[in-house]
Length: 93
Image 1 (cartoon, one colour):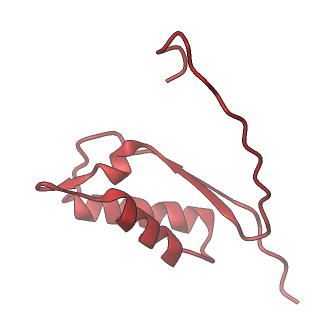
Image 2 (cartoon, rainbow, N blue to C red):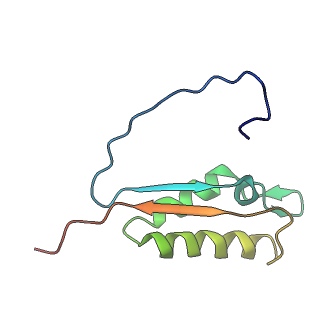
Image 3 (spheres, rainbow, N blue to C red):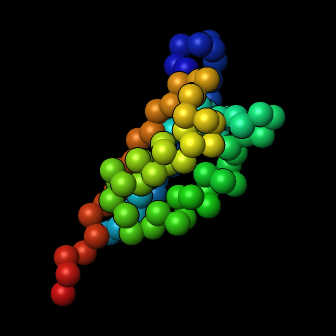
């Protein structure tokens, strides 16, 4: 959306990630996916991501995409992009 508005206010945030932490970014095609009048929504997304703790970035992205498509009847009406970055967990002891 950069360049869409002439005056925007950007804020810088610093976050410390620990081993095993993930950052998940996605387009609104995830939360706004529809089954009739019902949207996939933030709560369903948060619950699914919480249940994905400990999985790889690839597994997490795949589960999120599969669930969104299953919810929407396997045909997305909007673009869906999912990016998952995961800090590697500590090596086994």
